[in-house]
Image (cartoon, rainbow, N blue to C red; front, side, top):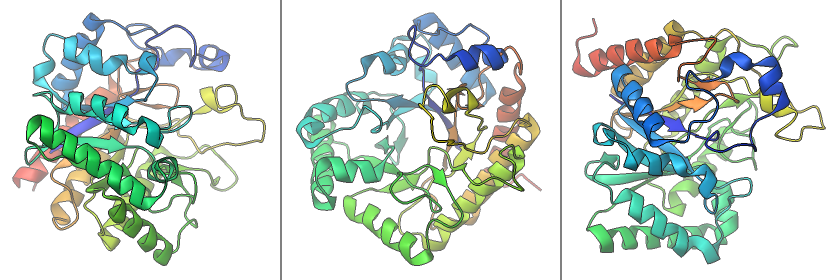
Length: 355
């Protein structure tokens, strides 16, 4: 199984995403190398960790018009040893980084350049790109037909430059809250009919496959927003099963390394309305490893739905949102050890050696 992880790299510059609450209440989330990570040498170290513990690729969060947030992929391509991994872009078309019709051709120049790399993640020889918010892209490009035209333009440009076709993923959630894109978990948001219509829309837009970024929960459990990590992983696995029930497009599992966004929910997200999401403080490498193995089992059991042997892990370094595997001052290498154990278990499932 090829496991990849989303890379945010938001601490590549001073300011912006740092919050008082992060430093005051969560100092243990500081990475082993410190808060600022923007150097080729540091990326080389991160690559070595990722390869050692079982990752096959990085999926770099990439924001149009935000070069200060896009340094990770460039550092990756500068790094010695980068050829030991594959990579793709996860286009973060949200917040202040929407991509409008007037910008699409310019954005495609970046997409083609990165997908043309010999280390680009490929499925059956086709380079991969992931779009974060399908609904936003439809709105920003001018509707379903316009979005399909734009995705077809990207295919043509890639074909013209390299002779390759591509695989375009969209992030989708079968329990998503309507109008909020691809990542929100709410058990009562969609009926089966509504979900079927939404997935049909995704296919009509021209997407080849679906995955997720993360599936977070907003409804408290027994009055508490603090919930077990295992509950959040089980909800992700329910999402995989729901996608298999409909199987409108191929799907690659979204695997959760954790969620605890409290450092951001008040300060960075400007929360003045009491907005909260459920969070887990008990995540551990053993449960994480089991979650990864379950993704491999799901892929093996759903050959008609799974897109190749790929799983996307949220995330490599989202320390503010609580989804990370990188070594930190408080957790050390616990989640990396879970990644290694889970990766090895997944390989045994794929090869039929898991008995």
